[in-house]
Amino acid sequence: MALGRSRGGGPQGRPGISVTGRRAGTFCLLLTVALCVQATRVQVFRADELDHNPANQRLTIERYSQPRGNLLVGADSVTGSEPTGGRYDYKRTYTDGPLYAAVTGYSSQAYGNTQLEGTEDDLLSRTDSRLASWAVWDAVARKQNPGGDVYTTIDRAAQQAAMRGLGGQQGAVAAIEPATGRILALASTPSYDPGSFAGSSAADQEAWNRLQADADQPMLNRALRQTYPPGSTFKVVTAAAALQHGVVTDPDAPTGAPYPYVLPGTTTPLVNDTPACDEPGQSLDTAMVHSCNSVLGYLGVQVGLDRMVETAADFGFNDPRLDVPVRPARSNFDTRMNESQLALSSIGQFDTAATPLVMAMVAAGVANNGAVMRPQLVDKLTKQDGTTVQLMRPAAYRQAMSPAVAGQVQRLMTDVVENGTGRNARIGGAVVGGKTGTAQHGVDNSGTPYAWFIAWAKPVGSGAVAPVAVAVVVADSDATDVTGGALAAPIARSVMQAVLGR
Image (cartoon, rainbow, N blue to C red; front, top):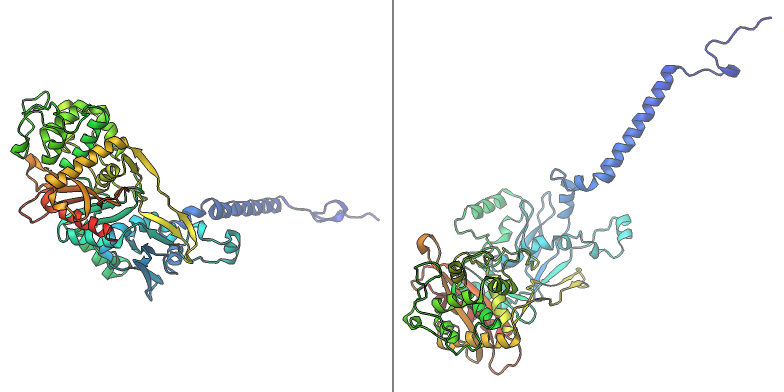
């Protein structure tokens, strides 16, 4: 009997796979591969991008699910965290917020982080890998480490003296420990309360908007982020350059500066603010005591552009990355000028501009025998239990002058306080060296002058490096006598007294 052929069968009678079936299977396989590729791309290659996407609220919610680490002055915390009862469990609080705002900056759920709250955010917000006891186990167990703490270098008494001295005036103070570079005070007025907008409520937004609209710019950190023409305080840099490069060998000998001193290439004399300067050949010491523009402008030209630029750079000028770790504005001393512009720059005018921080470095470098230390605002970073994560150590910045020249400049600054324009900075039982400055600005010098004072102080008879150097600028005041000696010197004195009495 003949056997019929199986319908659609293959060898040994197995059912066959149609072309359509094979195509469907291939398509499903391709879809599976595409899905795996997409999942890998999203979960691996785009993970960081998606984690930090502003639309992703998961990380933000997690960030505020625990208290933030703290910033400390001495042994005392000047920040905290409090429960909100809202979507974000905790928000930042500040103790004496306006007093330390120039140091801490702010941490806001709506507006981000600035100053130390920003530079040390990883540690404070618990994401710094150094906080983990065992990173692999913490990841497996999904353990959340508490935020770490930041110990600042700020001296409470010096900070209080700075803010009290500035009062309602617009200005700033920076104080440094010369031997280490530790920043002892960093004040800016008018100030603000960073806790007033730390949350994300309508009240926080209103507080933020008020601060942004304030014409006095209370949120501007004038100690770090604002530059001003330093005026005659810059003459300390010019005197150091003249002595270091041999243009002047004896501070008490005639300098050869003519009077009147006509700016090179012009018919314009460089005028002085006192008749005591109006005679030729004054010594460097006399010129510093009376703050003679004609002598110091002349000496700056004799030093020459390249060497003036070099000396200014040794004190911190023209450095765009002078991080403390907060990055300050760049202080400027032009590198291309004609001689008349150089003369004006050598007395702190023309395009010369400095932050109070850099002018404090100038005073500190003189006090530290010519060695300028890198300024630092952080003493150490720790875990919540006090275990040290990182200890900051003093670091040299530049050698601005030899110790012998530094000794000569110290004497010049001491004479300014004892016999000249800096008398308001005298402190009983202390040796004080300083330099006043009254910087003109505005169209045709029509603006209210900036009143400056830089100084250092140490106990009488002390052979050690002065424990404090300070720079003060008063940018706007209702006072009738707008000079560095009248306005800024008393503030510097109070800050130095606070440190000396520590």
